[in-house]
Image 1 (cartoon, rainbow, N blue to C red):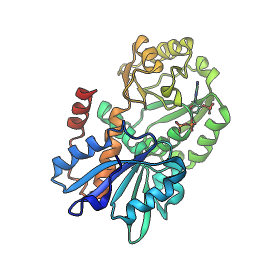
Image 2 (cartoon, rainbow, N blue to C red; image 1 turned 45 degrees about the vertical axis):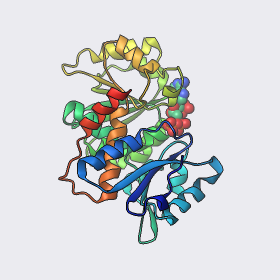
Image 3 (cartoon, rainbow, N blue to C red; image 1 turned 180 degrees about the horizontal axis):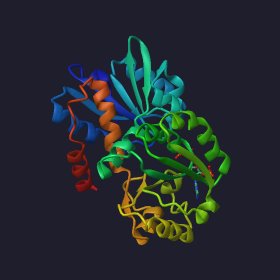
Length: 298
Ligand code: ATR
């Protein structure tokens, strides 16, 4: 049932808006953050019919709502509604966080930052790491700038449709050059010609929602072969959570360490929470505890 800000006059009210939305773990995550930091707030679900998204957002803020997380399929429409956008939101072209300030609607994108923070938990530091990203759609667009800012050495974007990978490389080349990172685009068939190993392989395609993998079994074993030379563990990451995807299965069979996107979900929520509640950066939320609790409930 949709949360109504007027039902909680003594609390700051937040929600996640999407369609569908009942499955969302965001209320659970934000409730745990609120407990950790003693915040007097309420976080609920907001379902919107596809045609009514803009009105649902406007009504929520008009009723005193303080902030929204935005999920599928509304992230690009949320972007279009904003009066002010952060640099990450502008780079991503979609937003997952909305809030009002001085009558203006602000938008931020913390999905990419969430991914970077989750990956950092794995290896402390992304500096000088080489990253292979599969996919060049909306999800990938949001992670390129945060990865560049984390000073990775290189990002190779592989996509079925080469032009889309190339378009992303052209879009982010200036930022990459500024930190000395190398950006490259590749059409999927060329994976078998790669000969340099990677530290991190990310599936950012939408195949997680189906039973497909973006890699053929020959490509997966080729990646395992070239990455064998790495002394450190090579992480293979799927942005999807709550299920074992075909990509995860394939990479596990090839001996990679496999991670799902649940940590990314928790970390992007932590960014939203700190931003909304104006908490100092020094106050760190215990995202590991939240992640552990969620995993126990899966
Ligand atoms: P999202 O917002 O989830 O990123 P999107 O913008 O539609 O969704 O992008 C989907 C991405 O997954 C694209 O990179 C798409 O490849 P194409 O650009 O060639 O369409 C990729 N994708 C979807 N299904 C795929 C499949 N079966 N194999 C490989 N890539 C796939």
